[in-house]
Length: 599
Ligand code: GDP
Ligand code: MG
Image 1 (cartoon, rainbow, N blue to C red):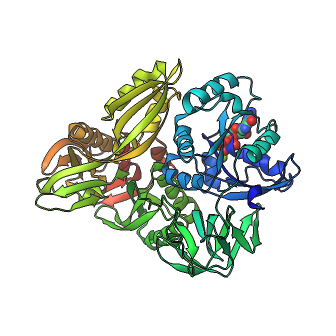
Image 2: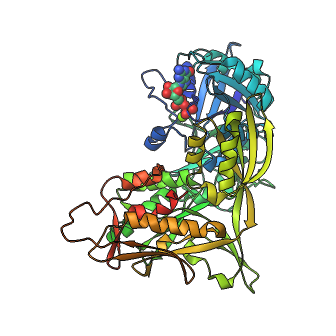
Image 3: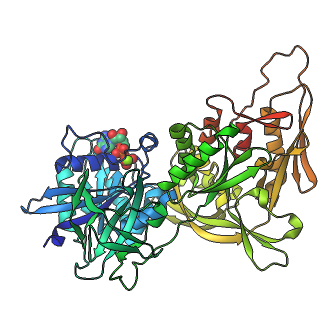
């Protein structure tokens, strides 16, 4: 039976621990790619991904492997993104697997970001094969990693395979243990068709290509299928596997991982987590665990040149074809003109989209500071509204309560840095939950934190205050009431809507003053004085003045000193200075991000 010979697995690894290198080595050892065909790091093929060293898009590859028992096996490796922004996609791709390789850098050990994914794998009862990688390095500490496996994950350290993806050590052992330790998929061919979608992308010629695992039944070309969440029906035109290039097959049967084309025009009709069934003989219920992902972070994107507005719309349309988690709608800002309010899964997702718009579509953008989605209960109204844009927060007297999203953050910290991490969490309105010793040197700290406090520069702060030794990840907890207010900014007496921000009452004065001060430094001087004010409602809470140029002063009138090294800010300073004229005053792009640089 073919199914007995299938192994579906993912590779979990912290960034840079060697996932791509190991995958490459396996492709090579199974002759899926000859050395000549082999381009470095086949699995991450987007330029941006490679630069950032993260995996964004999922792909699956089938390898044919003749094991030491003399039998041929189909090894399907399903790639997972390595970042919390894409956690839901990770959980769906793990659902398509029976096991995982857990790759750990022998010098670095287990990191908090990886833990979230390990726990997902444990929850789903997947077989976990630990691979301790980079043992060729002189400072590799295999025993320490083994202890961590036992103490943190609860796996016998002696089960770990010692490997060097770089020089090929342990690769055969990895392949053999996939065959021996990971169980074949269950599910039967003669049941109703149920196939799990774990990725999809848009191809200009063939429409949407759906990546899926057939859990039961079989999927053949020319059959009519139904998407169980949306109820939409399509005619399948092609099914196949990636080996690593696409190869058509007649049918994908229970346990198989592969792709399908069915003249689907929109990735929204091929949603990650949805179940594909037969339109003629539909399954009684879908696979469990579907959920629609919701954007967590919003910002405004405006073309620097007004006439690029249509191009920006086209570009967003195209990007969305491939990314159903990207949402946007038209926004009209008094200050910035026509643009789009865009929603993202997280900050990384936001940066990726902004960068692609600029690089691949050549549109220069003015972007506003990101914010989370707040919920507001208005006085005398039952309904609770979502506020995605600070500009649209109702006036204070109409608000009964404001709610903000909260997260639970898990930190892995060497004990010397517990103090700085606690201090940082305190500054960010964190609520201490628990502390647990993982081994004699490291603790796991748990805090409840407002999402808004960690979307800006939290990660950078954590790294710098712990010299890179602490790692963290977070999960969403839901909404809680908080005392929040909107701070408006007026430049030359005119409110600049795109500079408004929502902040906790206790920090409003401080932030208002800081931002006014920052803007004073950033705004180019004119022949007249420019007042910069921060206000809550009608009440001015801070005022600064950009002094008029004196005669004979030829000095740079542009000297904004942005101290924070936040990448976002850095990027905005590159290239030509982008300005937006508000009344008589030019406001540079970096001003719209200035709120990010306030501690
Ligand atoms: P990923 O982010 O998990 O996909 O990690 P990569 O596969 O891109 O590897 C990160 C870096 O570690 C690259 O510079 C690799 O060349 C290097 N690397 C990967 N495996 C090994 C190994 O076994 N030994 C050594 N010395 N370096 C490795
Ligand atoms: Mg990689």
